Length: 255
Length: 336
Image 1 (cartoon, rainbow over the protein chains, first blue to last red):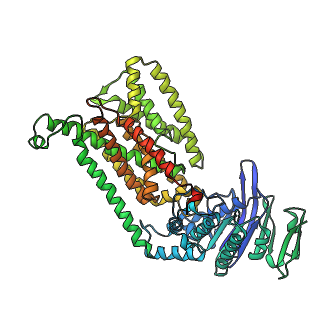
Image 2: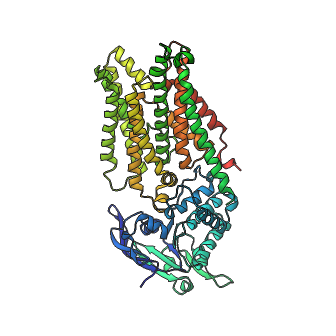
């Protein structure tokens, strides 16, 4: 098996509390994975490990078929972009300065080249935040901030995008925008992995659902087959039920 | 693309301006002081004007410029490392260690050693003692975080403050007065040899810090943010800690703790010029130096022949100004 990303038997614990226990999966370009699971199920930890921020206790992460440990952090950053869950909102930087930081792993130049500026502009136009480029990040609304951060990830031009709850705190229109941007990226040949709690967003936009429970991947289903076996729903709450929208898309509702 | 040339023009403009202010301060401020100095007499090498200018005023102004620049750059650096706008050269405990060293020397009554004031040696020893302890403490864990640095700094600060209080309460009247005076921080005339040594150290440390300016930008956003863009966060924090400590220790060994310059200058440069460390750091260095030299010059002329310590002048002018700036600031939610 080969793909952009292979996670083989990764385990991790915080002190004596085991969070991930031999997690294995493999994903390739064009996929948009939803990483699901209740709070504390290890979604963020798994994303941290794939991005190189934490080292797994056992197991391997292969990026483009090569062991992640053999990559320099900077080389990983050229391949994998990670959007942390919480970014300190009171940043003095302008939107464009933040997006420009995505170019960091690609150059040693002191100031951005013209090519960098083209990438920055393209990324900001893809998430529709170019108009806010001179505004200070702290003055932006929550939705605008997320567009800027997403643009910063796109400007990094990595083949794998990891997003830790990108749609939390966003209004519905912004959530839809965020996930449709990611779906576009995946269709353009990238791999997107988004940790999320919003099952309906995941069902609507993602190609595959990975459900973490008790440190292992409890379910790994294609979205198209999500309707066939509803066991995975019970891991979130016994009150969940799944039907179909008039358009035929699976839809989760509470009882 | 349209904004790129415009931005770099702004960049060049404010940096040039900062350098000009720095050079202007170096050239003009030595002429300011309790007694007037006649340029004509200086040119003819006539005493006392020539000696006062060269031996006292110039060396003192240069010391203020270098120390102010170093402290202000260290403040900028620590604010980026800790993501805390209130971080100062004090915050990580280095200046507390230096103060303790100097205070111990004053309390013991040692004055000079081979012509070098013992307070310098005490301050340097104290600062590096703290540095070694903190590295042993905070850095032995595998993950160094801004948070552990901050907590270690707070602990060091209170321990050193306790020792300083104990030492000064046992030191007797005149020595505890010298201690209090040293703790305010003042610029005094110094030998060109020690000035040159400080300048070399400050130049090297500042240059090393500045080469990492892009990394400080990323670190100022967040550790995870920086790491997933290719910054080796742990080693960068360790570098920043050591280099910043060298700047602070060198500067305050000669001047006493004037930490406020490291709070006010970075804050103003960040909001008025740019938060981008490629620009923020050099501008903060030059403007910080100029500000401290100006405060020192003001302290010389306010009520001659007495001199106000530069640290006190800085706090008296800078404190209210900073409050005014903060009151002017529109809260983030209301900004358009």
